[in-house]
Picture 1 (tube, rainbow, N blue to C red):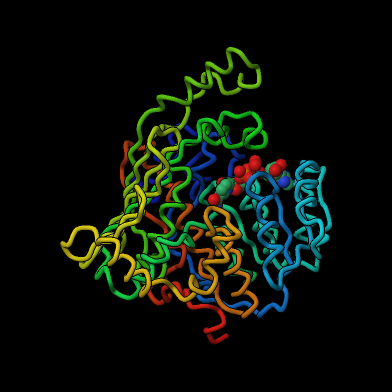
Picture 2: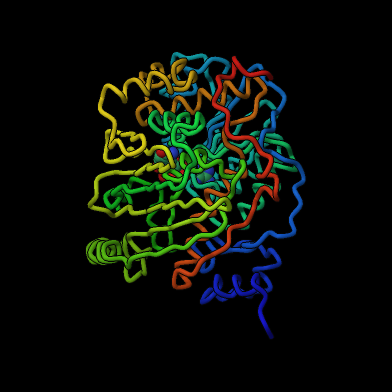
Amino acid sequence: MKSTRREFLAQTALAGTGLSVASFLRGAPAPAPGAPGAAVSPRVASASRRQAFNMCGYAAPRLEKVRIGVIGLGSRGASAPARHRVIDGVEIKAICDIRPERIAVVLKGLEGTPHKPAVYTGSDDAWKKVCERDDIDVIYNCTPWHLHAPISIYAMEHGKHAFSEIPAAVTMEECWQLVETSERTKRHYMMLENCCYDFFELLTLNLAQQGFFGEIVHGEGAYIHNLMQLNFGKNSYQGMWRLKQNAARDGNLYPMHGLGPIAQIMNINRGDRLDYLVSVQSNDFQMGKRADALAAKDPDFAPFAGKKFRGNANTTTLRTELGRTLMVQHDVTSTRPYSRIHTVVGTEGSAQKWPEPGRIASHHSGWLPANEMKALEDKYTFALVKEIGATAKKIGGHGGMDFLMDWRWVSLLRHGLPLDMDVYDAAAWTAVGLLSEVSVANRSNSVDFPDFTAGSYKKNKPVNLTPASQQKS
Ligand SMILES: NC(=O)c1ccc[n+]([C@@H]2O[C@H](COP(=O)([O-])OP(=O)(O)OC[C@H]3O[C@@H](n4cnc5c(N)ncnc54)[C@H](O)[C@@H]3O)[C@@H](O)[C@H]2O)c1
């Protein structure tokens, strides 16, 4: 029998996973995290979906106070209440982690402040109790990846806006469930892509929106960050969850740091959309050897011995419906110094952040000298950055972008305004990683991209970084 395109995609995605095409297409329950086929799950295609409600540009009723429950208080999550406690109008109502010692760290940090959160710990599903409270507006989720979607979906089902660390999900099915739940419940879902709030990235977004680059033709982003030490550290990620992901998955595991700012510049889901991708990947030359060597001396590493680890260098290229191209790299074993690349290429100008410092070129001038860069910064720095940038740098979090991000979404909720990033952004940016696995497993053949917006991208407005106080609610 001749396969349809959808069946062909499903067959190739499922090769060697033991799952049937029928279950893949029907939307069968996602496999358990780490199980074969976990990352390439149902519903790659989406031709017939109708949007229940458009969450792009959606404004929820304004909140006088923003009452937060933070779940997952590891190295990332423990820093969140430290930022939230200094933002006007925020109340930290509850904190949750399976490890009581992480609760203690956060409570210590809140000593002497008005924040006296209720504490949830001791069981794997204590987070459900936080989501079920009726005095919380926002669930802020900093748990390991496999818990991101289950917690966010449960939070929205219980009337909360869901904010989640990256990535949004570990299967395509979860991406769809996030979209459908956000639309049905009319709760905001925002993936906490802090790199969209880094200072040079914001400058280039404003330059793009003001037409400085002309037509955007091409963009490049990356997550190049040597995590060998952290991934193989027994005490860095709780239960070594991140090493498990690297041992069970393939492809571009973490595309959104590099992709998010470029996607905003290209108006992805807001005028244009991702059309298809091709992903090429090296073998693993490092992680398997390290795991075997450690396992020979330490039984805790025995489960990782002999495993086939994700290939070290992944390069994923994408084409948009309007004919633009993107390149997103992932390499967390690299000898290259840290880089998210952040290259923007337009018909009138270009920008590139890494290797730092960020540079901008106009026409064929070459990179602009310091005095012209300064003039551009003065003219094109967003009013939002002028308003809160200095405070953000003082309070910190990756140089200030973490605080800027949190301050921003709090002010938007308090003014009853749409958020800068919605569930469609989260699903699309996350799906780049998940569909790269399909391409890698299939000799880098191209994979079509689903339209999570069900066509509404054609009318959705570009992200609007105007300060909340200057926008009409
Ligand atoms: N945006 C960024 O710049 C950035 C930086 C670092 C990490 N992250 C993301 O933050 C997330 C957490 O990373 P991390 O480095 O803090 O990892 P971590 O292992 O230090 O923290 C995860 C925490 O979740 C807790 N946890 C696990 N299962 C739980 C459960 N069932 N209920 C409640 N708590 C549970 C763990 O005990 C741990 O404290 C990841 O998604 C990671 O990708 C983002």
